[in-house]
Length: 272
Image (cartoon, rainbow, N blue to C red; front, side, top):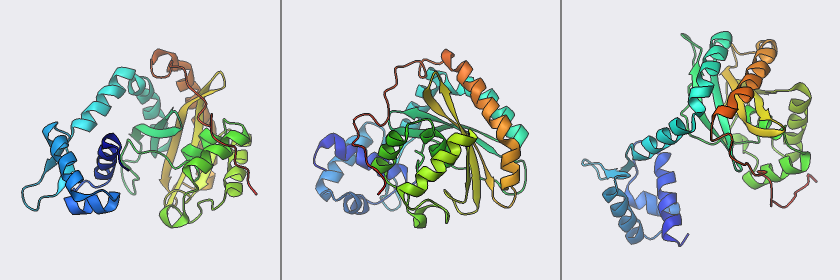
């Protein structure tokens, strides 16, 4: 990691994962960048308003400037304005957390949500993170819209999520991922039981128009309450809402952009 831009982005991405901030030495060690170079970059980021240093122990942490930029972008694309009423409706029907993820190149990013649970256990993750496509319900729903070769190539590029970092039932191999993808394709939506997070079950349907994947809508909840039977009962509502969002997507300039195949240019990697 030698380029100034590459190092700067790496610092921002690392700090985004540590809300309490990190010391300069910790940043340098984790990114394998000389401390003097990290210090220069942090000074520049602080001068531009993207990073600040706490007074008590000198940790560096992100400001809200990046968040503001992201929210401004989403507002100008119209994604949330179009999707939110549909997400709210599905959250009311299901009583669980409903999320929208959008496809952007070879990434699937959660950008909007609606919380249906009013009491008891609630699953409420932060927005803006990318889905691990091999073991998330959203990722499996997206992969189901692709040809098997393209799906395999994309999973191989991102890597299969290790069980120790995700749920106890996370697929361990490309073959296991593809079994889930094919079941999702046949069913019309994905069903996952503790594959992404321990104690969490989820389901997702692709949002696609004219054969082109725009994103996914998912429902997630604690496995004790959001059972397989409950998910199967909600399958029709989920697919219907995904179709409605696809029909309304023409109003968003983001969804109207030409979208390249996420797996284009990737070497095809086959399960052995």
